[in-house]
Length: 418
Image (cartoon, rainbow, N blue to C red; front, side):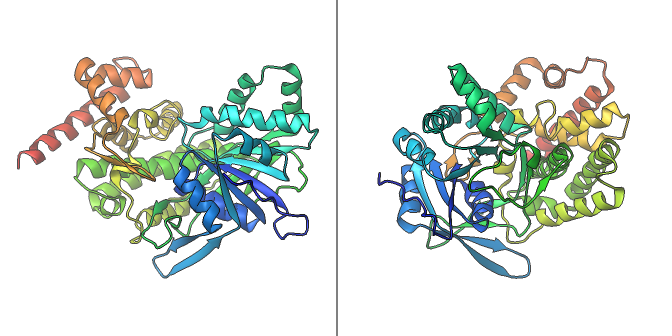
């Protein structure tokens, strides 16, 4: 692997951004934002072919898939290293590094503790200044989880003290649909026009060169939950209902009037809870416009996102506080209507595609979906729902989920016998 060529002080890109994860979100959302901010972007990934392509080409295009017209945006300059190459990681740590970002998936995130701890040690020994770490995952408080994993990796007290003084850990929320696209350049990625990267500015350290990123807010929790309980909730319910109706893509699903009605009602339910929780950050009018924008995004005729991909890993999405149960819990606490949200929860319990498409490759099976079906088959749906939610057997919401599950299951059986 050739050495990374750091930008000189006279270069238009005077700072380095290190991003772990060269998948679609990394290239389609984080890459363009950091590139526009003037960073030399270095990707770290486990896929050697991807790393070699990034180093050879030094740039790629994002294809902005608008219903009106298609546009191209070039992301450059970029280079890459293997995330397991500690020598390369140490070299980057000694350069003009300002920010480290991730988009590797929640399950992979803790594995980054080792290379990030090495970066911290290297900078401490070299007596270098602060940097910031931002985990851009579809997981609440992902950066906090990553920070805790790093602190466990740092064994010496001086390392921990250096980390507290010199490393900023900022929670964020990311939002953009990014997909593989047919192009002469395999690095290119297709994206929707809409995107948000909301970063908690209060948690950032002042760096040299300093970090300037659009989209920072003081009350991040409100925006994180708005995104999770609107975009992710709607996306997931669309996928699970689409699966039940034998739809292949999100756009096929959301253009089905029956599915769109339930998704729209579910988002109105979660929206009512969000408005009551975070008033005055969101008004009813503002949030209604936000919901309509989300539904329109799902209806983008250029975005053919697979139901199997969006719905994958249902057990993770059925956790407490997550996109399905989280808004239900918020509505439950405030005694608000939540029937359509419960329908989405019930639909997720039946999700088991024969294959699932990943960002870079196709997997034969969604292991979490298989595990969920095995648990329901072995223990019964009522017990599984109780384990997932913590609700007692006589809880009315649990009963509603079980009734809706039975109704959906019966419809599937009838559909399969036709």
